[in-house]
Length: 537
Image (cartoon, rainbow, N blue to C red; front, side, top):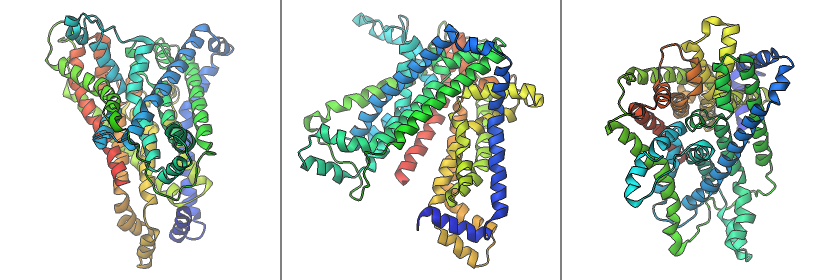
């Protein structure tokens, strides 16, 4: 009997035949989620419709098309580069005979813990004729050019998004049937041919899943292109919003959503093409790749990645702490620890609210195989795929027009965090719930426990790790969210990310040292969660 069949049997026994009351409750929950997610986004249509025929003119405007082309080009370059970096690193840390593979695994995954806009901030500060790198290399007559524009944004985004491809490809390689590769080798296939014909079809869905995350991140990223002086869709929308061109900003937001939809459709098409996959019944674990004397030169790639993505920014942050002089110490912009508390406060609220909403959704989707439960589990991912700047613009417009009392309030900001990041909690709790043995719940029910008592005594203790993981992920991603925080925070309510934003705009790099270090430290906890999940898997 499959897991879903066991889940369906369990629910039927717990709720009674048909479970009509419970089904109605979940239907209401699903409908509430659809409304909560789509009404603010639908408000963009209302604002854009106010432009009338000008909407078509603005859509085909040369400036709009140029920004669209630049955004698509950035997404394409970053996604392709991330695949070129992430897949070889996954192969090295899973298959290759390099020393200390576990160490390199952790090291090359860590850039995911650094917000890309902090990496951009550090790169800008370090480069240029008067930057620390040029000063250090001056005796050699070397000047490091300023890192900015399209090339700078693409390089920085690649450094901090390739771990998505690395982690998903690594997971696919770890589940690969080694006997298939060995069989190909016995049929006189060389290493490259065996990789092309056997390994690549098996890991392609994992590569595509990671590439999807990279593409969505690159398309939605706000801070990195802004710091690099590269105008893409997110900056274009923000500038139009600040210029009180609400209809134009709404129109651009809808276009950005359309590009997001195209990316999702492309990944779905690639992921659904499993014609090259095999039903594996053999040994799990990728075949060993003996590099011989090349195992030491092969470590150059992870070393270079670690130096540019980790050592350089952390070194720059440390320099900001100790260096004085113009551009680093300004009395008019000083850091307060209250900004850190504000970040923690709203992120904790978002984590708690996300768990409360995610728990019934995850429980239902993990135990019942029905269209309703599937819909309830998938609807939240609309918010997850929506760029933060688009969601923020939609909520600003909706609150001003429909519920003015919510405009620029903590509840609206927390709601934005929940809409954006709650699916992380759903996924984590759902995974834990699917591992609960239904016989334990049935035993509790036969001993006279009510449905609620059985859940509290049996299910809840077993899924607590998933709940904690989901809450931690929502907390950590909320701490790093920039565009939604900028647009939705109450007046005078500064957080770590908004202070860093102000410091960058003012060129006061030294003032951003402490919040940058705090964000990196807190964000590093997310990687601890991910790696702990891998170890426990």
